[in-house]
Image (cartoon, rainbow, N blue to C red; front, side, top):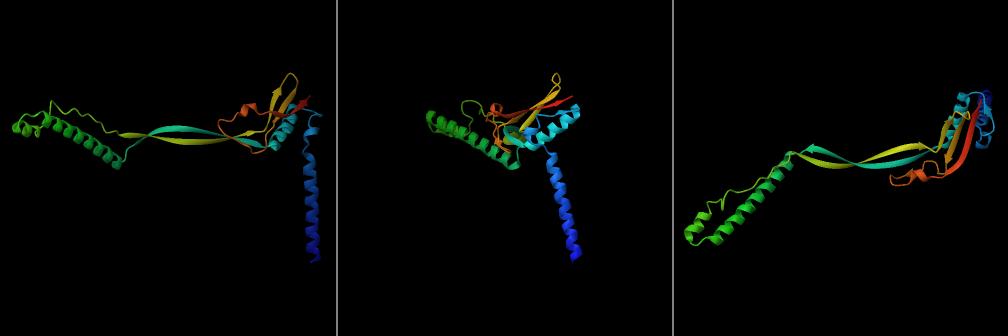
Length: 189
């Protein structure tokens, strides 16, 4: 039992030393301005590490998408019933008009043979497709920290935006006016 406990203690000591060294390898923001890195690649590596530690913010954009889909059989039947109802109402209207204009019983009887006053002018087309609208929401992540390479100064000029990690902005929010919290320069030889 004593051997197993000493093995576990040794493993814990090793893990503590490993994590202590790993923490020291990540530089604090205040330390990052001072050194001049031996190469552009070294400066880019440190800048990329700094960017990744800064976190992200999210911008949600929503758009309406219209698309055409074929009508189902039930929808086609509904449109046919509406068309038939419209035609029926038009015939009844013309029949009532004919009865009102008829002078005698023979004229009233002739009204039932229709069409009245010319052809029945009904041209209703049943659609084959319908247009549906869907709201699509797109989430885009952006880094809170950004860098730009300035070749003349042989440096990477970086900024950190003054927003909390994982902040969420809607489509209408003014993301462009977010103030800058910090500016850092990674210079190389």
